[in-house]
Length: 247
Image (cartoon, rainbow, N blue to C red):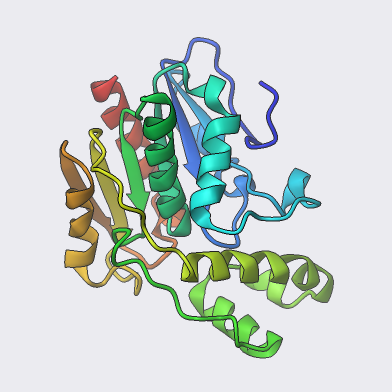
């Protein structure tokens, strides 16, 4: 498997299902690097790598989340020939949704399921405007938001590397507007933390049900925006069980 879009992947030759994982704003494929240890060989984990980070640090981000999703879908077309599912966390959930739409519109293929983590539906998604923030204000904001590990905020060299990435991701999310797509026909499964300020309006999470003609399900875990970190094994078991039932 050779593609700039996937990094830290597991490649189990006998896998039944490929799970593509889309990171949050400011995140990279490395966030999902340890996920493969929590799945059986029936599931391949394919962490998605956006431009501006890790091995793609010299590439610019597209002008919109929709275009980012479209490019990934088209350039990874051959990887979607086997049964697959999409998982996205926060901003990654919106990108995963747009990727699902692009795959159907261009190739008439859909995932077994779309998993949306820490995200309200596309028509309710919103993010605080950061475009007018100076660096100090923005650093304080992302520290509170939890988008960047605090250790990076205390290291100037790391901060200089990550700040443009996080700022660009937040600007793209701020400017996102959902297109006039028909509903997906695959199930949508929402997951979130019960103290995540992004998903406290449960009706806005439940609104994901409108974006599919198939089943909608929601699971809530103790925790805040990055509830995943403290419930990783439990969540990976849930994802694998769900996927094997669907597959």
